Structure formats: C-alpha cells, structure tokens
Image 1 (spheres, rainbow, N blue to C red):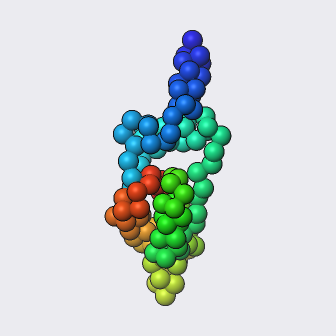
Image 2 (cartoon, rainbow, N blue to C red):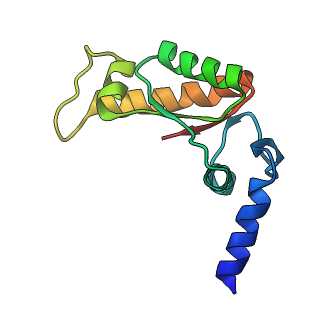
Image 3 (spheres, rainbow, N blue to C red):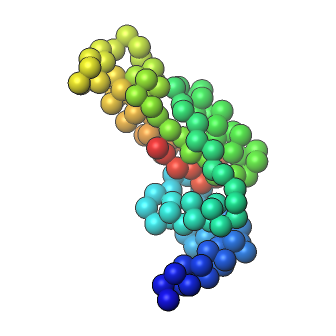
Length: 125
C-alpha cells in the first residue's frame, strides 16, 4: 500500500544524514528539497529551529550558529520583524504594511545571497 511505501521511505531517510538527501546543498532550499529535509527531521526526531530575524545581525547570528553545529536552520520574518528590518522610520500603514513587505523581501534576498557561504541548508519562512 502507499502508506507502507511512505513508512519505508521514512525509514530510509532516518538511516542517513541530511547531507545524504539527494540534491541537498548549502544555502536556501525550497520545494521538494525543503520537504525532504523536513521529512528527514521528522523521521530522525530532531527539530529544525526557526528564528525570527529583525536585522542582518540576527540573520548572521543564526547562520553562524547553524554553521558551528552543522545543522539546518529556519530564518523567519514576522510582520513586525520585517518592518524593523526595513527601518522603523518607514510607513507601515494598516492594510498596506509597506515597511513589513519591503523588509521581508529585503531580508529574504539577503538570506538567499549570504546563506550559501555558511555551508548549511536554510529554509526561509
């Protein structure tokens, strides 16, 4: 049955390092590769921590910790954190959230460009 195949697939994932996942790479991972990483974490009973980042300094700190531990991390941008990333002096009107949107986009671009240098898989949320 398909449920049995999923269980076998999860057991196979459990027997390998996340680096053994086909296509795994340093930097931002998305789509099926990100899903495979999350399945591997579940099968091996470990968490991939998510950190709300408000600046390049907080992003760098999370990436440095992931590198030191050789573990994947999740960088996330909340509405307020994203506004702070862009700059609190920018307008962030209810219903428009200009600073939040700008900060989230700028933060995601920053992570995408910097993350590969840290040598670990990174998810952006």
